[in-house]
Image (cartoon, rainbow over the protein chains, first blue to last red):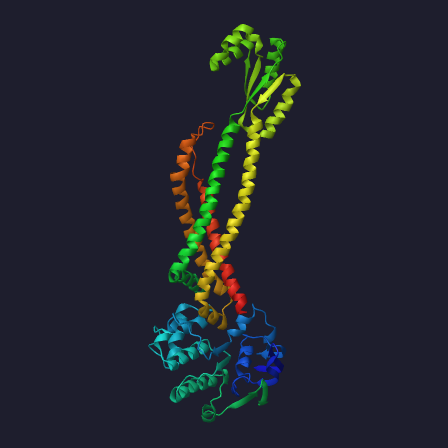
Length: 217
Length: 299
């Protein structure tokens, strides 16, 4: 599903990622771990096309994502669900609008969108909150809206950047269980986290980064 | 209507309501630009109308030499009357000219009495058909009748030609100024729309990250821009009507347009439609520019 060949990313003289070689098969569940500044978020950004690699090759589903033009990039992103560390919810849009955004860009019918929003909100435990604004929700609920938006279109890949970073223990477990459920449906899931407790509770493959280098795969 | 089109139109309309104050500013900018352009067009349109009425009224006076026998004068008159450009030819003998002149300038009557009517030359008063009243055609006609050996041919077209040159210059100047106004308007609209785009940046960024194409993001803004442009066009039309009734009509009355006997008119409906259309294009261009700038920066 995802292959990285000698992937590197630099910001000026700072190397965020150095010579990363990696293979993540379809349907895998992977933790990306390491201290702050290790390159976890940079790797995720490269995967969903928010950044372009400085060197190396990045294959996502057989497509060289590093060579995609601005016109082709949206089509890649439609197959990748992303849960952002800061949620990236639109504050003046309802929960349903936020979640439905990922379906609207696909040109889906309104009735289908409503049906799928109801189903996914049910999955993440937010049934009945369709018309709430993100500002009316708790941090945990906002995180679940972000997860709902990322999985509503059944993406092939789900990337989550510190999805439990702002949550208490019980809420973090709930979110992890949702991600594992998504993985069980066949979605490749990559979770950037440094929460060792969660990684021990839900053991899966770990990729450890330090100073931009993959030190343990 | 498919769901994507429906969604894009819904978002465009919603955005119009959600950013009322900024959108009011865009409408004002477009309205002001179109009022400037429309006022200029109204001036040009009326000057052009006056020019046309003057062109319609072209008379040529061809004066014979004093010793030219009247039989010869009438044969020339017949020849000229047969020319396709000519609508009417009148022969004015020395006596007719004396009567004509003393009627209009009674003070010269004693002079004419003293020297005799023959002091004034006989002439042909030629009226051209309307389709032959353009300056270059008049000049062609005059060149052609010159072969008849008139003492002098007088057609008051020289100053009309100069006025027409002035009008052409005014039109060229107006095109330059109008273009500058329109370019400035696009920038003003784009900058104002940039504020709207900036206010909605989180939404647009998120849309981009979930796979929205540029077309998907920009289309609602284009719809919004078209609506704002249309409103700007309507505002400008109302403004121009007000300017016409309050200012133009009064100036027209004051000048009385003695030379054309025609009052100042409002722009034709086709011009007003064109002006509104320009407003729509301005609104869309400004919005496109603002979103494009955001999109490139976000890339």
